Structures are given as structure tokens and as C-alpha cells.
Length: 600
Image (cartoon, rainbow, N blue to C red; front, side, top):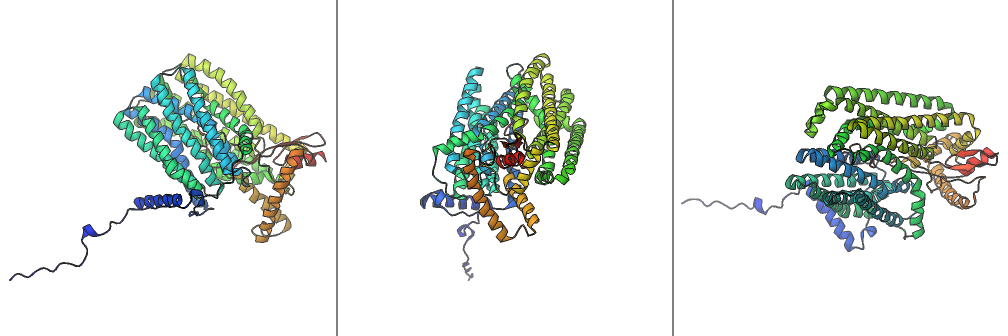
């Protein structure tokens, strides 16, 4: 008689609960948090779950986010070239370049002001409403541009799709700025990475299926919209304190305060993009692709230089603040300019050795005949790296406002030069003209630096301004922005305060980390902020001036000036102007105090 097999008491595999993979677990947890917050009174009422002051995470995810954001444009052009053709890729390139310029209209330079508004003189609702208005203006300007250019219906649809994508980018920037404002920059980096990543994936999928760059661009916009609605918007509300009420005067104040920074960013972006706009309508669309593809390797120079000097900006500020170390400051400037030249030569050598063939493999095109233009573009990349570095130097010297004037001069010259050269020699003229224009801007910035440096040596009022900065006894920087800083920079105002406290602690002989010392400094800072606001109305302190503090960052996509800008992370300061009793004009963060000292 056969024995009966006993049934196992263990549950079958089909009845066991499946173990979730990490990605599914994260998505489910995030969805549960969103639904729970909605049911419990809204996102702003929920408890925060992620830590602040995580420097390593901030650096890691901010870098990843900026790389993902900055590399999106060149990757998209490569994909369009491979799946469509050169003309379509060129058409897509000029549309994206235009969208990057409009992106600056959408952000209006407010990110820099927002993250430096440590005392929250404007509520987050003020920033949100301000950003919605600027984004609407951005779209209106974009549609007006398409109408004036007389684009075909297909090209207008492509413009609308890409403009909408960049509009979501600009809108999300305000919420990521809010996260940075409360020292959770890494969450903003994660948001930026997800938005760029999903947009790229959906673009590739739709383009591979439809071979329509218009449909693919709308898919890119939808991907960005999804991440904004499900990640960026709720994350900013969940992980930051509830906003104060909206004030219309605050929104109007943002337009006034951010105007100088917006003007500087827009002017530089226009100068940087001018070759592409001149080529549009004069040359065929394939030239747009070749220009952006040739610029792609030049970004290696720009990014390499940025990664070297940007971590040193706070140290440079310390050297400049100490008169005895001014020679070291000058030596660093010279060394950095030499290093930029060396990096440019190395990248140029690599480009000549194998870079041209690598470009051909990436784009599926033959770049052999453009080898000389590629080397010229590498040189232009070195020049733009020098421009970016010198701007930071001039920022430390508190003369950013003068740079806007230089941008304006360069813009006028670039239109004349590029119109002439592009019409005569085509793509070659655009590349050479770009190098010439950037070289002119570099010379103007060098001249400005030398002029300011001589002024600080011979003009006593500049030293009075320096004393006001280093002592920092009576005034704090005003919260109104009247000068500019590059978008490629972040987190300076906080670092400057740390430097000031170290200097003061050293003078009185105590540990700068002493809790009682820092508590007194915090109280003094709050009091000084109130006093500076009262003095701003009647010009107290012996002079009238406008204070500044700001920081921000920008990245470039394939030679575009997108917020584009160039750079990853860095430091900025501010400037102001004050006139002392003695009649000397003083540029400093603390114009009133400096004006009084110089008058005395």
C-alpha cells in the first residue's frame, strides 16, 4: 500500500508576499505620504522628514542635478541627429537655444535673490506668484518671437512644446530655490535630476516610435509636468515651513530687486547665443547643429576650470579681506589664468588627436572637414572659462554692476561683427566671430579688474569700504538686490557671515564655535537687520546706497546660454554705492557705513 505524502505546512510560493524592490518601495512610500498629507490638511501642514545641513548630500545631488540639466541639450541633439536628420536636429537646436534665453525671462534672476533672503523679507507665496507671472511673460514673449520670425506651423508647434518644457523648468526653479533656502539643496538636486531624466526618457521613446520631434518635445514637456506635480511642488511644501501670507507689494518688490541681476544674465546669454541667432535665417539648419556640436567639447574646458576654482571662492574672499594677503590674491588670479590656458591646450590636443572622430561617432556625421573650427571653438571655450572666472573675481571686489555695462558694449559689437562674418563666410565666420566677441569681453573684464585693483590701492575710500566689511559692527547687508552675480554660483552670503564671525572671534580671543558668542551674534544680526531697514529710507550712515547679497548657479547645455549658463556651484557677494561727506563714491555691501568712514 503506497504511503501518502504529507502536505507541507509551509505556504506555497504563490501565496507568499512578494518582496518589493527598492524603487517600488520608495515610490509607494512617497505616494502614501502625498495621500496622507492631502487627507490631513495639505502639504504645508505635514511634518518634515528629511534632514537639513547635509553638506555631502547637497554637493553630490546638486552636482548630479546640474550635470543632468546641463547635458540634456547636447544629448537631445545627438538623439535627434541619429533618429531623424541633420536639418531637423539643427532646427531643434535653434529652438532650444531660444527656449534657454526665454528661461532667463522665466526665472528673472530671482533664484539668486531667493536663496540669499535668509531673513525671508518676502514670503514664499510672493516668490510663487512672482514666478507664475514671469513664466506667463516668458510664454508670451516666445509666441511673439515666433510670430515676428514668420515661422511655419510645424516650427511654431515645436517652439511651443520646447517653450512649455522650459517654462516648467523655470517654474520648478522657484520651488527648488525654496528647498535651498532652508538648507535642503540636495532635495532640489534630486528634483532636477528626476525632471531631466524623465524628460529625456520620454523624448527618446516617443521620437523612436513616431520620428516626430514635435511629438517628442510634447512628451518631454509632459514628463517635466509630471515630475513637477508629483515631486517638486509637494516636496517643497512638505519639507519647508508654511509660507507667510501673500503681499502684492512683496511681488512688486521682487520685480524691482531682481531687475539688475536679470538684466546681466539676459545680456550675457544674448551675447553668448548671438552667433546662433545670426545664423538663423541666413544659413541652413544643419549649421546650427554643427555649431552646437563643435561647442560641446569646449564645455570640457569651462566645466574643468569651474570645478577647480569654485571651491576656492570663499578662500579668495578671505585673502582679499586681509590687506596683507593681497599679493597672494593677485598670484592666485595669475596662476588660475595660466591654468586655464594649459587646460585649453590639453583639450585642444585631445580634440585634434581623437576628439573629432569621437564627435563623428556620437552624431553619426563626418566632422573631419571641421577640425580647424573645432580647435577654434576649444579656444573660445578657454576664453569663456576666463570670462567666468574673472566675473567671480570682480564679484569679490564688489564691482559686478560695471560688468552689465561691459555686456551691453559687447552685445552691440557682436551684432556688427557676426552679421558681417556669417554673411561672408558662413559657419566658419560664426565660429571665428564667436571667438572674437568673447575675446573682446575677456579683455574688457581684464581691464575692469586692473582698474579696480589700482583703485583699491590708491583710493582710500575703497579701504574704508573694506574696513566696513571686515568689522561689520553696525550693519548687515540689505535684502534688496541692486547688483548682479552669475547664476553659476551658490551659498555665498552664509559663508561670508562665517568669515566675519571668525575674524571677530579672533580679535576678541575666543573660539568662533562658542555657543554664547554665536547666540549674541545671531541676536545682533537680527537687530542690525531691523536697523538697516529703518536707515534705508532716510539714507542713514552718511550716504545713500543699495545693498546686495546673492548666490546662484547655472549650467550650459550644448553651448546654449541657459541658465546656462555656466558653472556649477560657487560664491557671490554684493555691491552697493554710497557717497560720503568727503565726496568719495564707495562701493561696498555696506554703503552707508563705508560712506561715513570715507567722509570722515
